[in-house]
Length: 296
Ligand SMILES: [Zn+2]
Image (cartoon, rainbow, N blue to C red; front, top):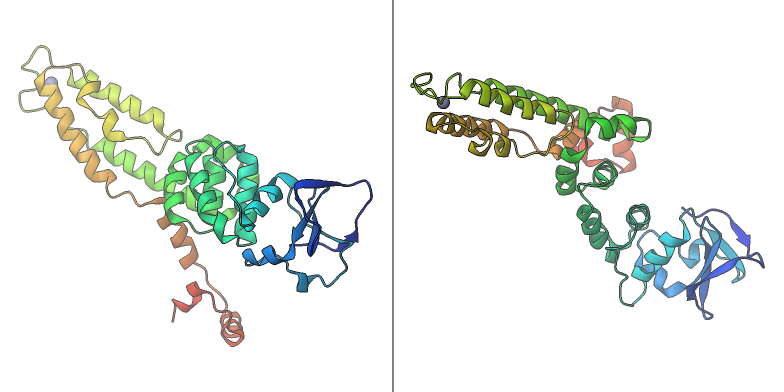
């Protein structure tokens, strides 16, 4: 959290928004901007350092690892004032703010950060997924996970958390299984009269839809498959349209069994296993994670 206190340098700059002169603590962002914050408002963040954490004089500075742009937004949420609009904040700043308000438990900012992160989808899907999984927002991970492509997660792999990679791989594997089942559910003939109508295009028409489906593998797991398997995508007579409607119905049934992304995260948590001696110590200390408790 906060780093060692240091004396304020004479050439440092101070935030224009946060420069009070009464009872305050001085914080410095990692990029060197000072914030003089009325100490009474620090209690509006559950996990933020308070005056009793730093019993130093007013000329001491508490270094924080966040950037000034993040702190300036976060401190506004901790003060009794109109909250800053976030919809036009650049994504990197928004993501850092969302992380900071979770870290310091700034309750007044948690929900608005969550909603604003969600509104960036399908852009920044991997970053939103990391945030959602880390801070346990299953509804948001259900939206972000399918928007992460194989290319995105492959390119970012060294920086992606092991939990997100494992959950996404399991999700993706299941998605491929479902898509294979959808492919196999294609009716062989559009109906019993197939071949008797000279206009019937079932063989070629349904094959072109299979190609459309194949091109989405690894690129999109949030497509509406039933939009691709659609009468709009086959230019044939009534028999072919009936065949497509039958295929679409089968595909819809198969995909209704596709688990939500968050269930793959839960499966990982439940698979955590502690050695007996560690579990014993956890219980004695009173720090028993809920996923350990569930095993008793
Ligand atoms: Zn046909």
